[in-house]
Image (tube, rainbow, N blue to C red; front, top):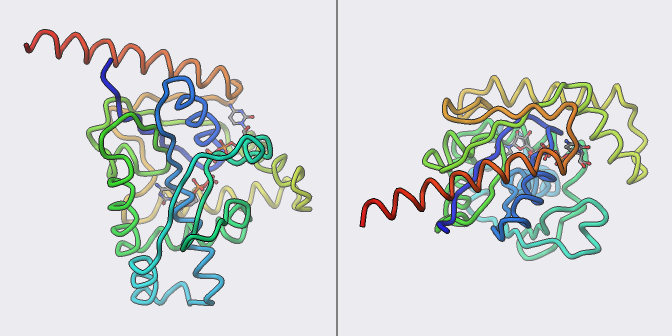
Length: 240
Ligand code: CDP
Ligand code: CDP
């Protein structure tokens, strides 16, 4: 069977990472979390105390930074991590999952020069197919020719509650209202920014999983992927 490029985009807490990770496991594909790259760069920005409006310094930082994604260990997966993330060869898998890093990531993500560097990295990492990549602009900018595009949706309240539960499990004492505020603020910025806003690609399938769990959502997308694999195999047979 031909190997597809699967693009999954959607707002915070819509289930992109959990669902993409599961789909990649079933199909034997590589899972890539593009948001983790924005988060890793955000962590470095905070560590270096670089002002978020210093676009020149941030573009240079992006160029000078090495970010690597690797499959999570079984233990890390149990704790909720989907990808291991390395920033300049130091593991930052847990350190990037704070609300402060998420907010800084979404501010960095409005800067065209920063996106340019990270998009090129993502295209390199996903070249060759057999990948499930998730983020905000995968189906529109990173892989506009992806054979399967999914736009994952869920109500803001459900998405915030999912995220809040994760914070609770880690011992972060944010209230569900604070998490809802954080998620809404980031969604607004992501949807309204000038460069590569969060928007559904015209050929993306909308999957609203407000009332679906991770398994059901992944099963549905795996079914769509198998259909696409078959269609592509049939088209390839016809052309020989
Ligand atoms: O990557 P994204 O921010 O879109 O979402 P996620 O990190 O995959 O999911 C956030 C949380 O919601 C995780 O703890 C998932 O297990 C949970 N989730 C869920 O309960 N039901 C779904 N249909 C999707 C995600
Ligand atoms: O896990 P969650 O959905 O909360 O966020 P994430 O996927 O880790 O992404 C963090 C931030 O990075 C987002 O709020 C976006 O601003 C940015 N991002 C982006 O602009 N483009 C992507 N392809 C992925 C993430």
